Length: 432
Image (cartoon, rainbow, N blue to C red; front, side, top):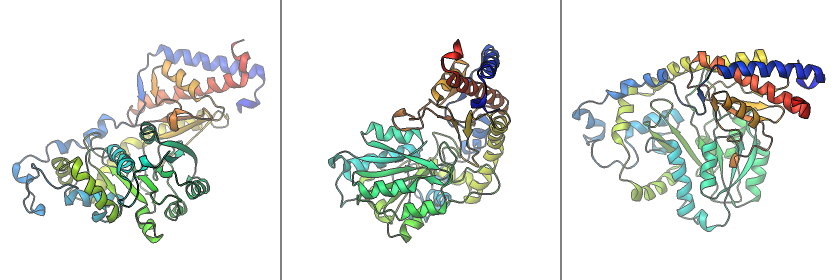
């Protein structure tokens, strides 16, 4: 039944029913965590072989590096075999990759700070000397991207997301008109939180951008490049190839890591870019570090034994994650379709589901969920400054709880969404 079409008496009756259900959920004393995209224990165990794959000193002196000892200093930008592994994930040549530490988020932060302090190239001024710097932010988006900007005083401008990627008419208009716009955040495959895969045309339009700022950069966070849930792969056009074709080879920084492939916090991360960009980054990295954790890089290389090992490994992840996503979809389709209460994404990969209240009441739903013992990412977190102008979006992270708990959490969310929607419809009459 469409909630907005209910009579007042029907709406009050439905609200009383949902509040009764909510009371039963509260009595269960739930403690469920869907606040972040954390792999569950079964996923972590897929990589337990990494704990023992490197066990002898001889392994630390691989012939591929001329017998150089991985336990010692050196190799500023990552061991060649690790470059090859991550280059295959991003479908770029290894020469276009620098392998760093355990976190792509850390690499992204360093990259923005580097541009702020030193400029995006030797020929350009540091951003910090150019007045108020601005970034475009597709929304709903990744809260950690927004936190980087906010912490550095970078102004953020919302760009709506469509089913095939950001609104490129707006992107093109903004970057062409304002030289203070220096960057845009993108999660181009299985976007966080909507699960959107950028279309070929969107990628090509990014590559063909003609910014007013000659030091504008696209921050291409390809975090879920190999994180499909189904056997049929969703293809993403290669941005590094496309910017080269469009005559903008230096406009993109691409990022990835193995944080949700192996062990979060103990993976390896990388940045991919043009040779010119990477040479400049290396020149600044020499002050920052003598080299990142080569033993961890070597562990990954030995554990996967080539790109095919990564693909086989990700099929195992998909088998664990897919039932969790499908449990939410089944519950939403069965309980919310036709009510007008909410709409939701049906991602084919990644780690999140985007849940949008048709009648703005995301904060109310979040509070009800929290009071019931179900933790979710804060309402508003998927927008810059934590401000969702429509109070509509919630991010669901299904990865951590088991399927049995997912079904309960879905029931709680449905109940809370119905309560919030009915309260908005009824207004003061909801508590009369």
